[in-house]
Length: 162
Image 1 (cartoon, rainbow, N blue to C red):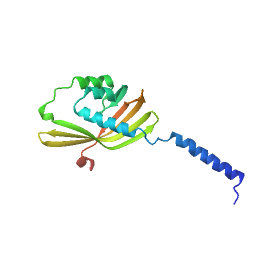
Image 2: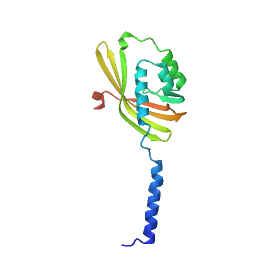
Image 3: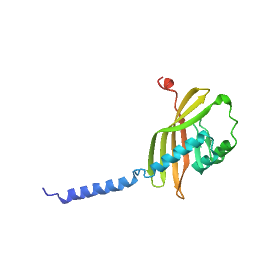
Image 4: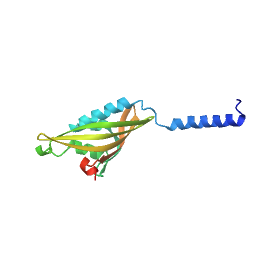
């Protein structure tokens, strides 16, 4: 069966369109291991209120929106890290971990979405809070940093069922 000229044009046009469209899709996240490592290092540092880790993680021009709807820049974030309220024994200690990490990379930009699990130990009793976080990372001077962050607190499982 011989393919006619109109059919060749249609096939060529379709192939060209698919090729162009694929260049706009997310890359396969070649920097996913580096970004995942950075995220885990940051969460470990956040549990210790590590100012150096916060300074490394957040870009100077970050826009951070907390789960309580408070918007901050790096200046406010670093002020809170450097002069926190003294911990109270009843507050316990909190460990942060990331689950269900998804990374989509677009060249020098990456979107990192994950479920943050905050496990607080208060005198032997564990309390767990879950958040959905999404961070927009830019790679500048060979260094990934967060320029946008959004946190959403998930309701406890018993409330989510209602």
